[in-house]
Every structure is written in structure tokens, then in C-alpha cells.
Image (cartoon, rainbow, N blue to C red; front, top):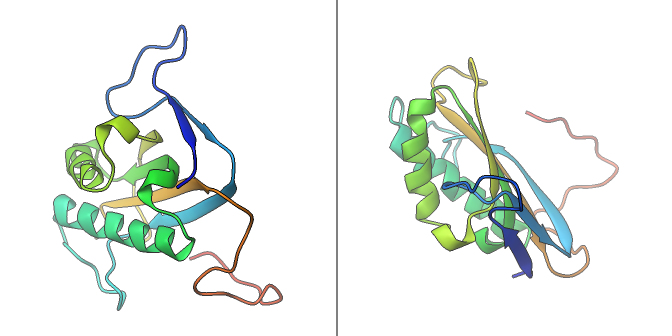
Length: 150
């Protein structure tokens, strides 16, 4: 786990209840692409159910972080893309299963008109900082192979 400093309410900025305004640390930067409510076989989990989708998204984030040698303790920023702000309580509940209130990262929540498929209710991305220098990920890809985002 990296040493992170959380500043929940910088001077002159109103405190926030559901996130930390500033998180800083030193180490290796990890970016996790937006995760959807897909199981390991690519099947949707929880059609029409924001709580089930949020739980699956956070499980996918956890797996991605582990692949980079990180945990939720290393997360400095979460970005939530939701099709309806009414899904945020479900997102917060799923987040609470992984991140305690005293370690909340910086965060942004954005309501979007739609995601890549209409049955997806949310997509969540994460940024983390882990100690040390870059190392091999658990699923390496060839640097000479171009990859395209989904």
C-alpha cells in the first residue's frame, strides 16, 4: 500500500460527505479503465438492478487493481458515469464494501445520456498510486502490439 495523504476539506473549500477533495501520494500511477457490470465471460450482471451492477463493477475494479499490484487502499480517484443519479446510493453501498469512509478517494459523478449498451446503468473508472517502480502486470501485452479501447 502506498502512503497517501487525504485532505478532505482544504482551506476555503466546503467539506464533502461522499469523497475527499484532495488525495496525494508518491509511487507508480495505475489507471483502470471504466468497468461495466460484466462477469468473466462478458455477460451482463444485474439487468435493471443498480445494486447488482454496482457490486459487479466494484468486483471488476478490484480484479483490475490486483492485476496491477494495487488494492482499493491505493485508489486516489474514482469517476462514476451513471445513467441516472438515482443509482448513486447503490454505487455508494457497493463502494462501502471495499473502501471505508475514512479512506474515501477523490471522486466525480457524471450523469450520462447512455453508455456503450443501453442495459448498462453505470461505468466506473479508478486511478491509484502504488509504491515502487513499474513492474510486469499479471497479464502483459506486447508493447509493439497496438490496442484499441473498447
